[in-house]
Image: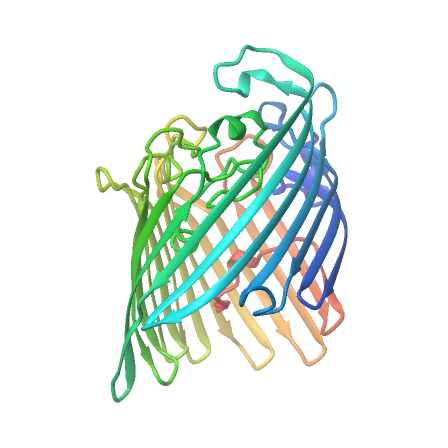
Length: 426
């Protein structure tokens, strides 16, 4: 809680400290992980949130061979989670088992994938906050057990049309999906929501069978999803692609998504993406979300980069509209610029700045650093200046040192990944 202490030990820009102990195993197509996590909130008391300890979390995933079962592939996922809070906070234990089968068809130019799944959940809840339940009274419930069962059929079909030219090929691909599932609103509301509160719709998850990020909420009900992909692809690696789409629920009642998620109405928001790359030296990626009823902008994100000899430039722009009924009532808008210049083959000078364009505009961060990349050793030294509006002790200057041995690992006093110009792995 002491600002000077946090700065001395380089916790000045960290809101929540995390300790993690984990063990994972890869075996063919199968995967297993077990982890224990604990958290400590370093912010002032008014800003702190209730961080449960994860004691433990287990996740097992098994995937069958292609064509091993009825011409398709089976999968089995097993998960166990135990959350513990100090004092009188809500504790929860959860076990989830899900089995599925998936098969891909190619018929007359149509590319189709059908996926069937069945899932069962069991919850044990202690000191549950009853005020979070719909139409429930205040107070807590000492102990409660909840179960939930769910089955789903999800089919995605596309019809790609391709035409080749001398230097490129053009692709137009209508795509649609049909999801058939029962409505389980009562069961959804009966279990606590620990891991599915932050829902964000975009082009990457629009056609997912379930758009919730976690397991505590299930996207129930039936719906149709539709969109259009198109692109020009050069034979030397350059490309220009575009996508737009949305989904529609068959029943507008019992929608499980919160307001501001882009999925809370019968028709979802319209999401899309424009991406381009030329000669491996220039690129841009633009993503958007538009309200389907009023056609108002909800979110815009743009990442762009360019390389000219030794000079590399990066930029990132973000606009996110405020969400009524949440803590994020203020629209957020910011732009980041970064540059890197290769002084020699091994030494690089870099810098960047983050500027807030929102309701209280101003410079938020600035960074200047130098990197050394050798055959065996990496070295990086950077100074970062933070200019925030918060009173939680984040404002100040940090000196960051990073040293690494190739194929062994690295050591760093802090991270500055957002400032690395020229990092464009997609």
